[in-house]
Length: 134
Image 1 (cartoon, one colour):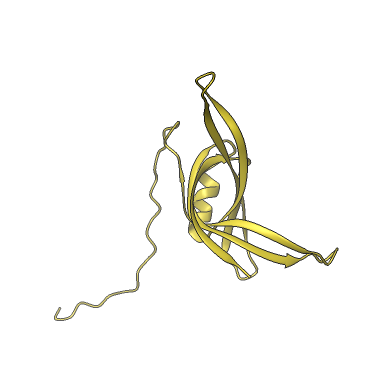
Image 2: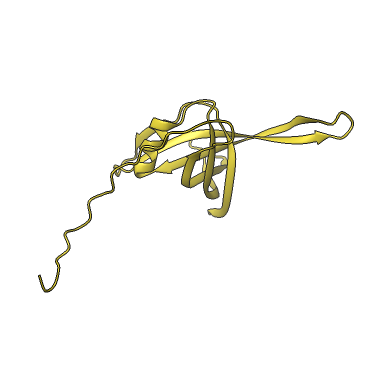
């Protein structure tokens, strides 16, 4: 069973993304995003870290190459996608395990604390179109 929940996350990469291809040839990139919760301490008037949640993120196809080439450990990123919960049976123990991954539709560098240079990728070639009447 799989459940999908739309999410938008902002956090920092804990390591460089891993890039690879599945059995069918679909490219993917995987990385972990650390999302820090900050709260204002009313007694001191200062912001304090209140915990970190780690999210495993997977992105596919051309975007996976862009993520691998552009983002690195420590970079701040914004991820939009679906939070998916799933389960599987552990082959070694036979126990049912739960998984939680974000399947990203869009990944970008956060401009909150950094400058970013954008290099557009060429568009994929479209099928030839015929012009009528010419």
